[in-house]
Each structure stands twice: as structure tokens, then as C-alpha cells.
Image 1 (spheres, rainbow, N blue to C red):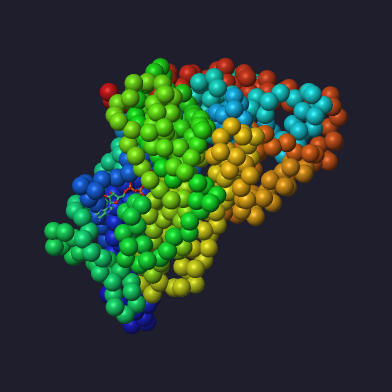
Image 2: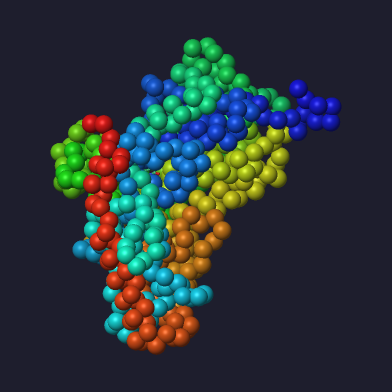
Length: 508
Ligand SMILES: Cc1cc2nc3c(=O)[nH]c(=O)nc-3n(C[C@H](O)[C@H](O)[C@H](O)COP(=O)(O)OP(=O)(O)OC[C@H]3O[C@@H](n4cnc5c(N)ncnc54)[C@H](O)[C@@H]3O)c2cc1C
């Protein structure tokens, strides 16, 4: 009931309609049901006939915050999704053919006062007294050793949490969240939306007309319909910002294979002739795929390259997917907020899409509207969302652009293309004296950029002058201690396979 002092525009949202039941739809349903504590009616519409994209299996550590906010039990979640633990991504053949590095989660070395660790490392490397950056990074050493436990213990050293994320089966994750959401009162409707009804006065979405004749009304609509963007694009014609001049890959093939050996605790990305291939180890199978640029390689060649590279027996034919990298011009338009693939697409090189859903949900809660849909709030929401997308875009472009590969026209193109101004500035700053600054909406912190820049072969010309406060012997002692401590910590960890077997073994 509206109070006398509440105008129509201040009236509270009472019904939220989520369209789409992929990872995005069910993540939104679960989180909103939990956070809004039954104060709103939440409905979710999905069509089994249309199905979901069925990929999206690697995540970043922020996912753990999402699961924790829902109160999920980690071991139960990993078992339910045939999941495994992820300490980072191994990049093979990216900076140069034959080279590899890991972008690992968590800290790199140990900062001293105001000066980040890597400046000491840069100085000591120049003196020939430092090992690879990877050796000073706990998650990196653990990943290469195939070891995992959430907490690292070693005699004489403080207990240290390991930074990690998950690999999981996206279909099972959506199913798991569906059970969770329905228990909290989310009402699911099966069927296809045939038409979207707009309110004549202001063009807001008023109702969904289902193929079975049902009419579903709502105040706030969340478009999680995947690439088609049923509400945000087909109904509201929001427009799309195309970034394929920076990220030219436009197709993917996905194929599951049998596991060979226990799952390694990291994702692998291997750069090919005109794109790259992923390997994501789960408990019941391995997810593989090839992201490629159709201007430089045919579908048949891409499929052959993928199948030549996979390690286990394929369990299905490669499944094709097409996309255009970019984002909607507005992620929130009128009374529709787009999430997941409906909001835009950035290739899964750094496993960011599921996190972008999580972040979109947080942002929606932060700017949760009344029925008046305040334009100022929506504009700020969209500005923040755009910035976040753009920083991920830049981070992905860095991998393609900062390479010495010249062995194919695709890599020639990527190496010599113009990149966005913000990225150009970031590269120049690092090249000059190893400085890295994190923007407010940047998902990735300084050490993520550091590992990828160094891994891709970007060499700073200098380092922070304050690193000279340690002389060469002190610097060598400092680095040596960190490396030895990490080696001891990792030696005490169980193997990833043992940890899964003992605590999170999924049913066969
Ligand atoms: C090749 C590839 C690899 C990827 N790898 C990763 C990764 O490793 N990590 C990561 O974080 N992300 C990854 N992603 C992204 C990730 O898959 C998606 O972000 C995530 O799965 C969310 O998808 P979605 O829910 O937005 O869309 P979808 O899964 O496509 O779901 C769309 C939903 O909308 C419904 N729908 C559509 N139209 C209608 C209609 N008319 N009526 C009723 N219902 C309708 C469908 O039934 C479905 O339920 C990858 C994406 C691709 C393409």
C-alpha cells in the first residue's frame, strides 16, 4: 500500500522478472532472493527448448565472495558442480612461441613499506641475482607443483590463505542455484517469451507475452537471455559498441574430453595460429575450446587445431559459437538491466564473464531503484559498468598486443594494431619504471597486470628509486627468504587430486 507521502515515482519495486536461466539468470535470482529477503516477488522465465550457452567454466577468486554471500558450503558446491580448484591461468605461446607463464592469484612476493615487491625484483634481476617472478608467488609455485589446500601451513611461518577460484560445470552450477533460489521463493516459469510488451507512455517494458498465452508483468526486468538480448536489444534497441577492431576473435568451438590424470589446479590457455585454446579441468571431464578469428582461419582448420591439441578422448563433436566482442551502449536502459551475455561479450581469456555477472548484481543492489527509475542513478550505474568492462577489455587486449609473435598474419595484426589510449598509457608507465596504478573499476589488481606484462615480455627500463634503500646483498637475502619460505609452504600441501578426493569428491 502506498503511503500518502509517497509519490508514484517513489513507490517501491514489487516484482522483479528475470528472463533467462543460464548462469547469469540463476546467479541474479539467487543473490536477489537472498539479499532482498523476501521483500519482492522474483520470477524467472527460461526456455529449455532454447537452452543455455553451456560454456563458462573458469572463474576468478571473487567468485568465492559471491558463494559466501549466498552462504553456500564450499565442499557441497564443488561436489554439486563437479568442480575443481584454480590457482591461476597458464599462458602458453603467448609472449613468444615456446614460452609459458602463469598469471597466478594472490600476492607476488612481499611489499616493503610503500614500495611494491616487484621493484626489488626488477633491481635484483638487473644485477643477475633474482630468479623468475613466478618463484616468489605462492599460488604460482603451488600450481606448478599440482598442489592445493585453502590454507598453507609451514613450521615457523604464519598460516597463509591461498588465493584461489574454481572451475565448474556451468550447467550444473545453474541447476544448483536454481534449487537454492526456488527454496528462497523464486518462481520459475518454463516457456518461450514470444513478445515483449512496451508501455506506450515511456517505452518501459510492461509485460512478457509467453508462447503459452501467459502474460507476465513486472516493475524491473533483468535481461539474462544470452547473446540475443531479448529485452535490452530486441525490444529496447539499446545499441551495441563493437570492439572487434581490438579483439578480432569472433568464433569458438567447445569440446569436452575425458580426463587424463588428476585435474591440475589451473586453467591453461595455449595461443594458436589465429586465436587460442582453453583447457579447464573438472572432476568428471575436461572442458576444451578454441577461440579464433574467422578472418584468419577457417572453421575446419580451427576444429582440426583444437582436436590435435586436446589430451583426452573427445566426448562430443566440437560445438560452434559465434560472437561479437563488445558491450551494450547502456547496460541499464529504462526498466531493463542486462546481465551476462545479454550485456556484452569479452572472450574468456581471463575468465571474467561470470564475475561480471556477480559485479552487475552488486551494482544493481547498490543502485536499487524505485518505480520512478531515477535517470541520475541509472547514468552513474552505467558509467561504472562501462568502466569495468573497458578495463577488462584492456587487460585482454594486452595479452594479444604485447607479443613478439610474427609467425602468422593474425599475430602480425595484433602486435601492430592501435590499442585504447588507457592501455597505451598503462604500458608506457610500466615500461618506464615498472609503475602500475589500479583504476577504481579495474577488476585486476597491480600484481595481475604485473604478471601478464612480465609474462608477455614487457621489460621496464627502470625501477622505483626507493628499491635502492636495500643494497645488493640485502636484496638477495630478502628475495632468497621469500623464495625459500614459499618452497617450504608448498612442500607441505597435498596434491590437488588428493584434496578433491578427501574433501570434495563429486559423484561419478
Ligand atoms: C566460448 C565461451 C567460453 C566461455 N568461457 C567462460 C569462462 O571460462 N568463464 C566465464 O566466467 N565465462 C565464460 N563464458 C561466458 C559465460 O558462458 C556466460 O557469461 C555465462 O554462462 C552466462 O551466460 P548467460 O546466462 O548470460 O546466457 P545463456 O547461458 O545463453 O542463457 C540464456 C538464457 O535465456 C533463455 N532465453 C533466451 N531467449 C528466451 C526466450 N525467448 N524465452 C525464454 N527464455 C529465453 C535461455 O533459455 C537461457 O536460459 C564463456 C562464453 C563463451 C561464448
